[in-house]
Image 1 (cartoon, rainbow, N blue to C red):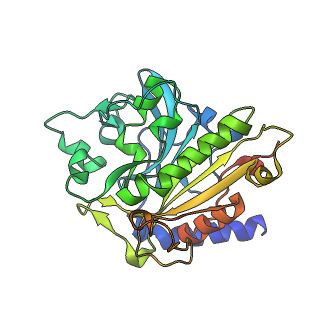
Image 2 (cartoon, rainbow, N blue to C red):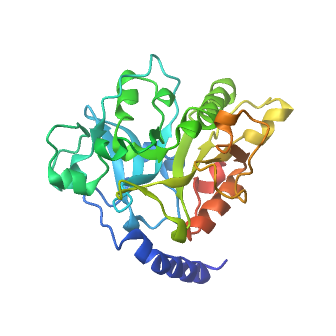
Length: 305
């Protein structure tokens, strides 16, 4: 596709999506990820996603950046979180949840902050809060999972609602959890350098949008992709498909159609309908492009040196 046609396609798609995303959302924290590019392969965030619709957040905790999230204020959920994977050196921390002050106040601290009672109304209006998830029948689904982070501080930093989407329990503790474990095994067994991971949520199509508490957007699917540019040269034949990149899409609604992720009727009933389909990076990018209406590239140069 020529650059001119690509620009026309992108512009048309974004104008079409204007009512859905609730208008232009300008970032108060930063207009880009320039302060935390280390969490993206080749220091390059995904291309094709117009940042005007979203708020880039360099997730800062205890005076350190831990990962990056692209946040949608109207949906009160992130589109994705990007991080470098590291085997945890300890246990999962207690879930003391935090929020992002600068989403509520442009001159507030750049550090994520623990929720306080009572909450300022500006905080409630600017982002998801704990009350949204209570009695919602959804769990708080990490995009950057705590056990994919090495240090205690890294893991604590994942407990911010700007890293969370409403996820069905059958997905969160079932097939999606097993996918996260499989990605960790791929990293520890075969990667010889950093693994860059981008995990996100895929919305329902426009006419089927769903919310919790009339405030927080519910994704129809979860998705994830990794980039491991340096890996063992003598990979076993069955593993060669998985490097340098691989991806997956998981169902977050057992009643969704089977066009993107088929249902395996042979799995145990508690996990049925939350299937995860693994695929190559291009297949995932095609799915994201079709659903979001934007031509998307997740890793610079398809993660090839």
